[in-house]
Structures are given as C-alpha cells and as structure tokens.
Image (cartoon, rainbow, N blue to C red; front, top):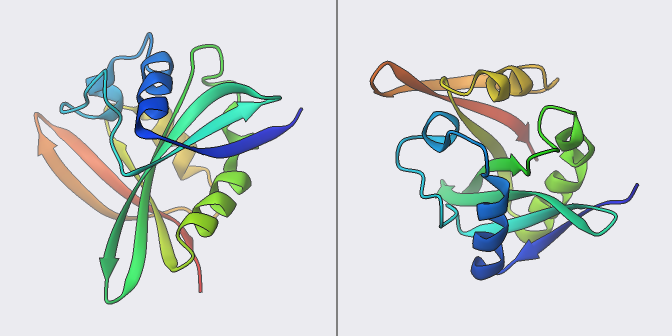
Length: 151
C-alpha cells in the first residue's frame, strides 16, 4: 500500500470534505460552527492509499514571535475511521507540513471533548502533550495538544 499526501485547491478540498464528513455528527466531532459544505483552514491535504482518497487534513497557521505555529485537523472517510488508517499518514503529513511551511516550529492538534475517540487517539501519540484547555460553552472543552516541536 502506498500512502500519499498532496495539496488541494479549496474546491477540491470542499468536495473531499463533503465525502469525508458523511455519517458524522459534525458539531460533536469538530465544534458547533462547523460547516458541512465548506472545510476550515487555509491549506488542505488529501490523504490517499494507492491513489484513492481516504481522508483530508486542513491546516491553519499563526505567527508568534516570528515562529510559525500550525494547527491541523483530520477527517477520514467512512470505512477508514477507527481502523488505524490515519496512523499510516502521520509521518507523511508532518513531512508535507514542513515542506509547505518550512519555518514552522510547532504543530498543534485541537480536539473537542465531545469527540472522545479522537481525544484518546491524540493522547496515545508518543510526543503529544496537553498545553491548554478552553471551555467553549455547554460544558464542551477544546483541548490543545502540542504534537511536534521542530527546531
């Protein structure tokens, strides 16, 4: 199996997003402001196995003290969720982010407490650590994890 990650245009990303979010409770998974037709972020990556799209990643960049901080989210298509498919892409996603944003110093994951499966998956990553928790209303918390710190 060949796992590939490639950049997408906004239109390509929106189309893959619509396919990927099927059968999900978007508000519990990605927050109450999630649009089922338009993906968040400013940069989008397709995850493919043997050329077949299986998921999507979106990225958002902030600059602090002239260092780029990248936050990312990921959604796998139905049939590829909870089967370990996302783990195959971990290194390829990180390499692609470094290619797109060579000045990036930190990679963050933002996970809502209403999404316990994703929360559990992030917590088990070897270098992941919680750096913040933000209450977003209705008893929901947004956990901020540092996944990678590059020098």
